[in-house]
Image 1 (tube, rainbow, N blue to C red):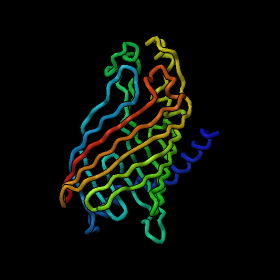
Image 2: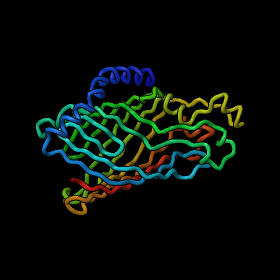
Image 3: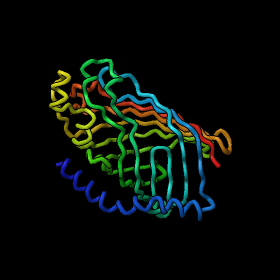
Image 4: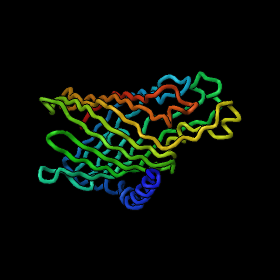
Length: 265
């Protein structure tokens, strides 16, 4: 039932926001030209992720960090977004259309396990999503429904974060807790073993199902001075048994750590 509901929601969201996404580049150009308050940032970041694959160490890579903050349009590292409205004290509800990436992949040659080396690779994911944020004095509630742009499946998530900082202009920490529903298309892409793969590798054939994964995250920033900024985040997600039972999986947790430095101008 959840799979059918997710597919319906994902189809509706995709149809409604396709036009908006096509117009993002035009909107960005207009904002760059017209908004005197828009701010750009440039820097570099490192990502370390563990997707809990057998025989695979943490995946570490460096990415360029390009940021843009306008009145409606923004770009923050792996997330491109357009705010459909601006939250305020009178209306603390904010809706955004976003395109975001997830830093998880599987490359067979990275595994020390000879059977895992016979499987197909899994690429980074990108998602088209609608995000709802409710900002209160007691924290920030966020809900998101996303559709994989390659058609692998849908994901629904909800989280609560409570920013901690006596001086938000200088630094801030934001612990959060959440849960994600991931459709079988997603989980099967990253952890399923097809018939052909099973024949090549000797691993058991496995078709993953939809899953609920709870997660914890701690993110924060530190303003070194008026121009230089430091950002970091660590997160951990407990895998559902529908994923952990895959012959590809090793352990019950997915973790990610991000550290980035940027210069604003």
